[in-house]
Image (cartoon, rainbow, N blue to C red):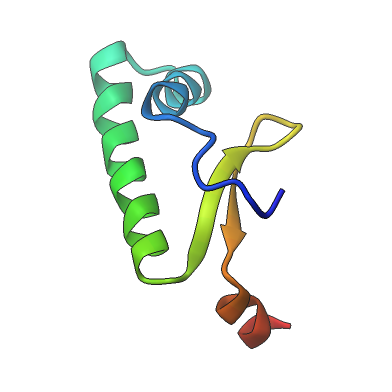
Length: 72
C-alpha cells in the first residue's frame, strides 16, 4: 500500500469524526479540515507519504522511508 498518497478524503474524514465523536456536520467538517491540514503538513515535512482508512476503519498514516529508518 506504499503508493497511497491520500485515500481518505476530507468528506471521509468528516464522516468518520461525525460517527466516532457524535458531533454535528459543521463541527465534523471543521475538525476534518484541521486533520487534513495536519496530514498535508506532515507529508510536506517528509514525515509521512500518505494516509488511508485501514481494514478496521481507522485513519492510518504511511511513514516515509526516512522516518522508518529512524524508528526501526
